[in-house]
Image 1 (cartoon, protein in one colour):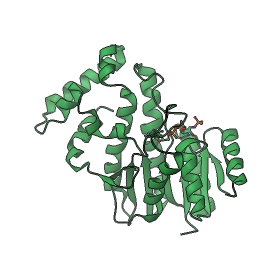
Image 2: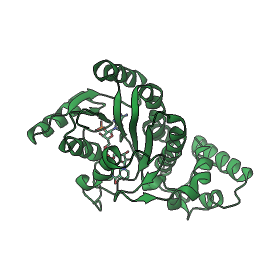
Image 3: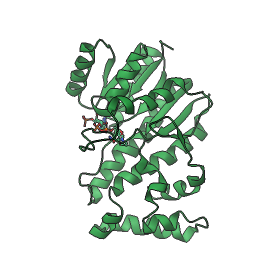
Image 4: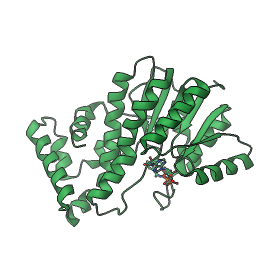
Length: 284
Ligand code: NDP
């Protein structure tokens, strides 16, 4: 286990930083702390060095194809591949109760489309039985959105194609035209963020189906944590929030695949929501 190569995206601060620290604590030799800004990354490395940990650093902007490509090339050359990939990097709406087309694209780019780029370049270098963990959110759990009119329509047992089409039309038009109004957001705050994380959950299922070679792909909600993203008092510490990702990376049985976990390491049942997740997936 000690020789495994692990990468954590967006790990210069917050939960990603905590995950790197926990992986180091567990004795992994090749842990990569990555950051889009090299200076911020090096500062984070220096902090961990002071604590007695010695992770490696590599620049990685998950929204920059060339950056993902360059890092993949480096990992292949240096280690022959990758054992553990934790997709943690993420952003949230600039304004929690309003959205714009530009901001929606920014959030989707960072939280969702970036994972497709990572899949294109990094999945081919995953070693047999490698583990991929997506840091999603409870915002990506469809049951959280039940109280909204549209999501309720989408989560009906007898969902019809016209419901999906109507939702997609409404959502895309509203975002494009900037007509999502205050009331919509009273009901659906953080809409772009939610859509990005729901998509990530759905993608987990798709990727697991296609991964092969014993590779596992799982998603999790790390808990509500005080970080630069939330800025408010969280319910758990960064250290606590880092345990479940490390559990999925190192401890859980290899047969656990395509699943969704909570920060306390319990599995969340999304089986009954699969169909619905795919419905919302159609939006993006
Ligand atoms: P932070 O804002 O503290 O950290 C986010 C990290 O992602 C930073 O290192 C940031 O880098 C990095 N990042 C953003 N965009 C990119 C990019 N394009 N390329 C590379 N790195 C990038 O947030 P958290 O630690 O709270 O969030 C970590 C993950 O956990 C996110 O995916 C978030 O959605 C998820 N999450 C967090 C919860 C919470 O309560 N905190 C709850 C549920 C989910 P930089 O410093 O350069 O901005």
